[in-house]
Amino acid sequence: MCGIVGYIGAKNCIPILIGGLKRLEYRGYDSAGIGILTDDSTKVIKSVGKVSVLQEKVDSLDLNANIGIGHTRWATHGVPNEINAHPHMNADGSLLLIHNGIIENYEVLKETLKHFGYEFRSETDTEVLTMLIDSFLKKGHDLLNAVRAALSEVEGTYGIAVIYKEEPDKIVVAKKGSPLVIGIGDNENYIASDVSALVAHTQQVVYLEDGEVAEVYCDKFIAKDVSDKEIEKEVKEITLKLDEISKSGYAHFMLKEIMEQPESICNAMRGRLLLGEGTSKLGGLEDYIDRIVQSKRIIISACGTSWHAGLVGEYMLEQFAEIPTEVEYASEFRYRNPLIYPDDTIIFISQSGETADTLAALKESKRKGALVIGICNVVGSSIARESSTGIYIHAGPEIGVASTKAFTAQLTVLSLLTLLIARKKRMSLVDGQNIVKEIESLPEKIEKILSLDSKIEKIADQFKDAKNFLYLGRGYNFPVALEGALKLKEISYIHAEGYPAAEMKHGPIALIDKDMPVVFLAPKDSTYDKILSNIQEVKARHGRIIAVASESDNRIDKLVDYTIKIPDTIRMLMPILTVVPLQLLAYHIAVKKGLNVDQPRNLAKSVTVE
Ligand code: AGP
Figure: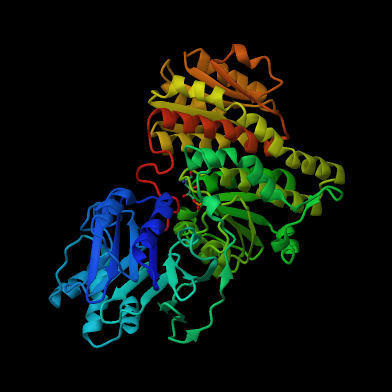
């Protein structure tokens, strides 16, 4: 979603802002803009579409400034056009503001401001906040206090950065619900909504917390809390490297991330498996494990792909950890006043750690006294920081909007958690050791599946013009069917549905004819014979079938049009393997359709608005 970048120092800020915005492109956006402060004036340049379009405009102007802010906008209030793009400015152009988040009471504020003579050019909530700050400047406040006063009247979420011609030595930033990071340089400072925009310049960062504001000068920053008290902020070192956020020769980030999975799941399990004891070690949980083991119930809450990971987690935890587990969409959970008991453990799963609904559900659960565990990828993200404790998945930066390696790393971590709890309960040493060995063998098995890439590409060629797809699986592979369908619809815009295979007869079978491709997840497990019956039912109605099946299976080939054979593993780990061909299938179909795989239309990498 929207991205923020800013610079103050001795260098020309223009290439820094454009470079930072390019790093933020993966978040998803539809327009972009920069605002700069030169000796005696401000200047704003905006464009619709890609940052490269903005760059062309900016390059033609030969600009130079030592302080500036930049923004990528994902439209919420008002269509994507130059007027609605950020930065927004006050009437005389002396005040420039960029904003991530949503000002919920903007209509009321706008009406009041109109009453006092303010005129608005855009349809955005952000312009209202700009004018509100301006109204406090006009009352004699300095920039920091005008920002604070305006924010005290605002309901909603924000990460903002403001520059003001009358106070040209600073950028004022504030945060509530949207991430805001200050990057510390040598006599220069940066601001961003995401460390990937800073990593080319500095590894030293300071994360603002909700309610905090800061004045960022070139040689220092002053942060204050809600009560206007100056606060000492810890400077943290980011471990992110520039090459981790480049395509490294791959055509797309999504393909790179699919191909990285043997390594990313190794990283997710590294140092966490104890073969001798047949268990796992999760440092963050050590102080809480007894309480977790004694939980009467586990609730997993998340959105999108992370929610699918949660569904697989439910199967794992109920089967082996023997704790009743429920999986909730965070967006529903947060609003229905859920019943939460002191002996519940609630797990929030989020790749980005910034998803607004997941974060809000977490805060509500904490408020009700639950033990809250975060499973996140982005280190230092809001969900990671707000959780009582957590487990990082260590998948490395995921830039492609369609989540791939985060999903398999989430499943790996959920299997480690399951193993840890199960071994504290009734699981035998031998069974625990068997699971450890199976987890350790996953990277090699994924390598084998990835070597089928060109075969899967040829299958994609046969299906790229399909209008609909069905994905069917049972047990542990039902959530994989959902995930396969989500991958396809996100990046190829083909309508796709995932179902438990047995549900087909209760409705979706009506859709099946020669134009309906059906992907079956059919590894040899206890549901295999039932899946074969479902395959027969589709075949009898002339559906075209792709099956993901076990290497050892030589029955299935005659029943289906295409098979993708994968290595075997134990049932609980099977989703980590079966999902990989589905990721590649979706990827190749989207590429063959000529679509923007890494930045699909309307989507954002991290959904920071409700
Ligand atoms: C996955 O491909 C999607 N882009 C999306 O469903 C995503 O998983 C969801 O928005 C949750 O994101 P999170 O894991 O960062 O919380």
